[in-house]
Picture 1 (tube, one colour):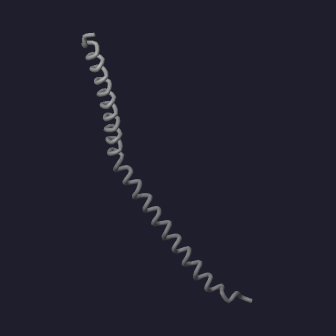
Picture 2 (picture 1 turned 180 degrees about the vertical axis):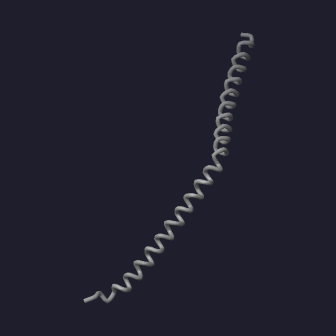
Picture 3 (picture 1 turned 45 degrees about the horizontal axis):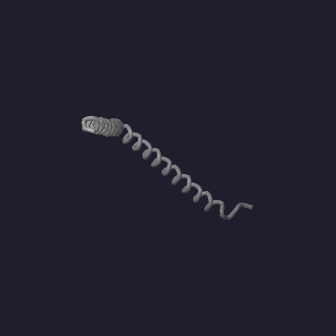
Length: 79
């Protein structure tokens, strides 16, 4: 005795597999696009990192210079 729902199940399973396959294809395409974007932005990231390091160095040197100037002013003040 054959299952009366077997044909319908087979059709539904085929649709599910087809949709899963299409979804997998789209995800692979999306991954490829993301990889391209990451490669294209690599130089921007390097430039941003360099700018951040430069800003931190400038802040450190400004603070050190200001401290040095304050110490010199205190030494020059008559007591």
